[in-house]
Length: 68
Image 1 (spheres, rainbow, N blue to C red):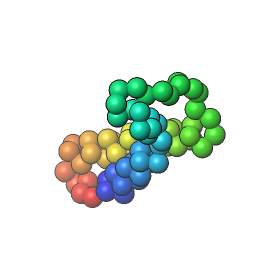
Image 2 (tube, one colour):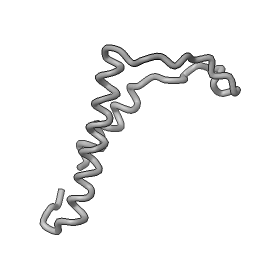
Image 3 (tube, rainbow, N blue to C red):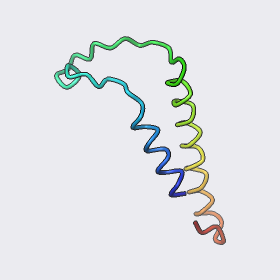
C-alpha cells in the first residue's frame, strides 16, 4: 500500500500542466491538446496506480488478515 502511494505521488508530480507564471494571476494561456507519447503513458500509469492504491485500502479494511 505504501509503495503504490509513493509511486502515485511521483507519477502525479511528473505530470506538467498549467505550470506557467500567468496561471497564478488568472490567465492560464494553455491549450487543451491530446496526450501523446510519454505524457499519455504517464497519465495511464497514474490511473492504474490510483486503482491499485484504492483496492489495497479496501482490501485492508474488508479483510482483517490483509495487513500491509
